[in-house]
Length: 369
Image (cartoon, rainbow, N blue to C red; front, top):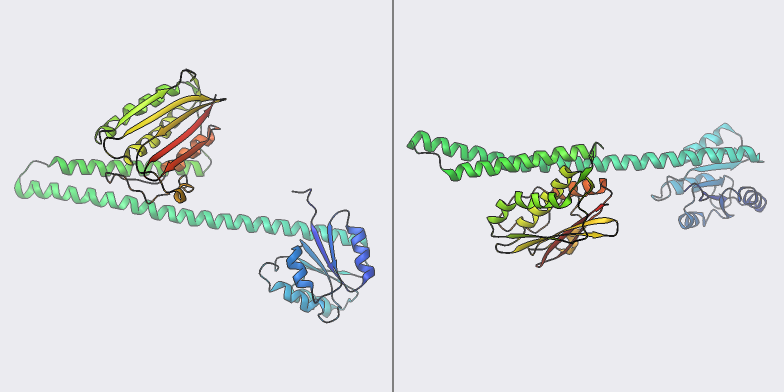
């Protein structure tokens, strides 16, 4: 970016000054010139200079008034204006600052002094832009954090209320009727507790990631073993919906590679459990493992509900939820895919989604060999 010349616009009714400044500044800057203050605002909007050198004594519209016009324009107000003037009266100088100028340079010019002023104010402008951008990022981050906290609190409150409600029912049934505890209530309590635990774990994962503390502990291991282990882990969930999970392994898949088995287990658990949640009863889920160039390629493909195309671009954002609901009303947190993307990125791999509404989804990720 430093190799791109800064743009300087000189507005002066003196042809000599315009020629002098263009010739002496042209090597370092991209210099535009104008001898008319009337057309200056339109020219500024067209060129969007990084700095403006503006003569005070101009016909029709003087420099003070032109500077004020520049400063009321939303897209122009941040451009620094330096007055070039032969006037040295203190009141005139103060009037220039009041109009919005950042500096003034006396005529006739001392070229070295002029260049020093330009460099200083262009550097300040870059720093101001950097601070402005950083502040914008901080505001956006803070808004996301507040949204994050609000959604997390909402998602924790519902299962907590369910736990309290079912516990009250169990207690009432025991005290009033002396009945044994209904297993239905206990199952609901366990289900709600598991959801809360999963949400808390994922919130903690997000905190680790956002603090830059996500650590990948790669060891030599078998991706095939991790995939098969995760299929076994999710077999109880899939059995409830009579869903078969098939694993297809190409012969060229290496027996071992370097990766973090704990983190990739987390990735697989998210993708496989999501595939089960969004599939109808009796459907099947296929997992493909193959070698592609210098990567191992893993695909989790379901034949479920699919995701609308316009919603796919936000899938890997925190608390991203689509209009598609799990087929049996299973809980969905909306953090898992964002964590998946961070983990795969840290492995120097890539995660993608291919989905067609009503036909199913395919989530893929790669791990470098």
